Image 1 (tube, rainbow, N blue to C red):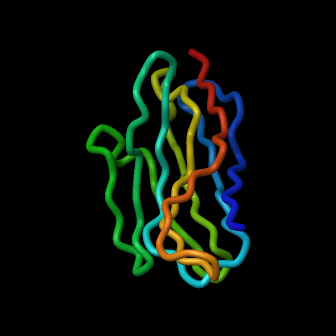
Image 2 (spheres, rainbow, N blue to C red; image 1 turned 180 degrees about the vertical axis):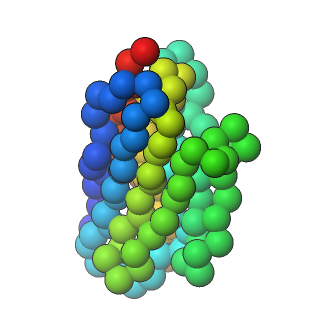
Length: 120
């Protein structure tokens, strides 16, 4: 059984910062890409940032310069540093990872999400 557990969400004022974490656990053999997605009120889920096992990153164009994704392969953890937050960043943020485990080949796993609320 593989799990992704996010943490670090909460309420922050516009202009503030938050750091999200997502830890993968279970019968993991390897993790390929990891990423963050978000779904705002009344909106579709969208990609925020992705990072490969080798550290190559990809960001949504609108978020470049404010958000930074990183990972600690030894801890099976991915992070999202969010700076200069805006009210439109309010969303549930989901962690995603491509994981090979002892019970299955590569599977896309999702966390349950962590709510980020940015007040104006």
